[in-house]
Length: 222
Image (tube, rainbow, N blue to C red; front, top):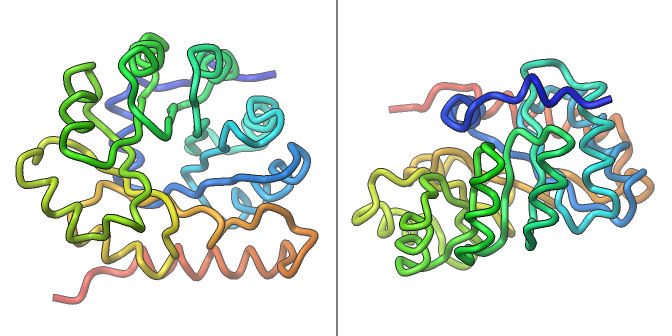
């Protein structure tokens, strides 16, 4: 059973994502794989977890993770491409909704849920359109093609936009993006494998994730 009553307002969720600085993204071939990977990530200490909507039964996965997650954990649904997907994510108590693009009708539908929304943007024009639709936090995607200097350039005219770069990023790149001005950074397959039945098992994933979290917790060297 989900707990939609515990969902916080968008500002509070955004502030918690900023404190975490890392959003781990799961994209798996089956819902069972996603749930298995997600439970290991939660056990390793991940505080912000996104299940992509392209994962089969993504909302069911989120509901399963919600039953096991500590109250302080944020769970979101990503790769949202339709109004119906946004509504399903709201129905299972997603804390935040993420889309790969930023068409106006989709942003409207996502905002109507009352959740934190992060529409996908890549250009200044897309940022302006998303702002006009009411979004103030955005997924910079695919971030690997833009680079931290591209984020710095966008922050010039848009200093009040909270950007979460995602797409093709490795854990060792997170600090560079944070230094460039990212609110937080989304890391997917280079940290969270699609399945635990390949080259990495639960123990190895736990160690890997805890190393990344420990590195992020260290203060910056001035």
